[in-house]
Length: 84
Image 1: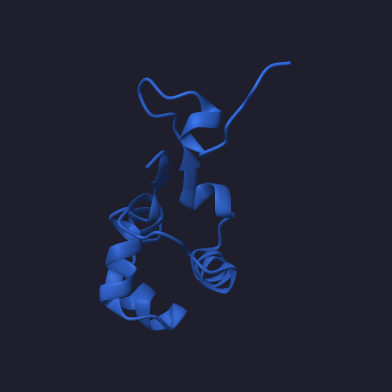
Image 2 (image 1 turned 90 degrees about the vertical axis):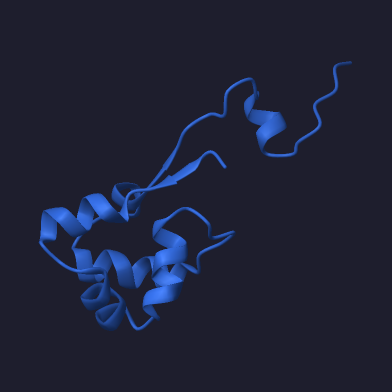
């Protein structure tokens, strides 16, 4: 998936453990690990907002887009583009 999750970076900057972040955000450490390791298929805006509040950051500090090798942006998004 071309979305990279940088929660580890923010945790290190804040000198916070995964367990502490999970507790303060109100999610289980297992669910935070799924998100942190890039295995999540989706994230609720409420969860993203809580992460940003606790970590005192912006959503862009936690998530970034990187193109997959060989994929055009439309193909990666599942968008069919036709000419004419």
